[in-house]
Length: 269
Image (cartoon, rainbow, N blue to C red; front, side):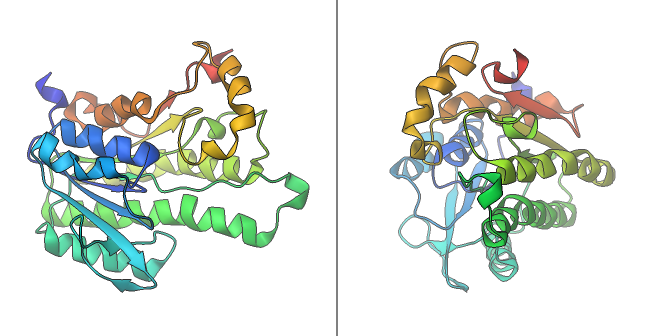
């Protein structure tokens, strides 16, 4: 079990204020990693307990316009992954605060739009691309540069894709979302190939239906989602957490360029 330990390592999670991102942050901290999160909203109250419960260091960075201000919990800095300037400023401050330490990055920030294909606008699609694809890509790039600079021997980037990158989601109108998550899954092996020489592994995790603030917008679809899963329920964020910790740890040391689907069997029947 020592291979699952992240003791002494530092992790960055975007979109870590709530939902799957918060669960990933909690799981990594429980395994021993110090945690920093980037988000555009204040973190859930559960984030405040991670530092004490897990005996690790935590920090939260949040964006107001493009002005970066640091908080621990009481005093956050804000980071918007869709803004190149904000993302770079967030990394600069994070590097300073954590002495350039970084071993694990989980770009989890993402959005969805429930709109018919024939009604999607350029603006709608650009919003998804700017966060789900460009924000994720450049978060991974900046994280990789920081890992290379600090010479980590345990570099792991866990991209957050989706079940929607494997199938058409029958109950939702999310063609653009499926496309952005397909981009995430497709870029994973290519990035992994380039970063292997630096001892940085790159994998992705593809969650299925998860009970989060994003899916809370579709309460009328919940029963249908349950029926699509082999085990008859939708996931809680904690159900996805284990795959992230596994990919971040030395337990998956021989895995790179791979995708793990955690969907209750939806894509398999």
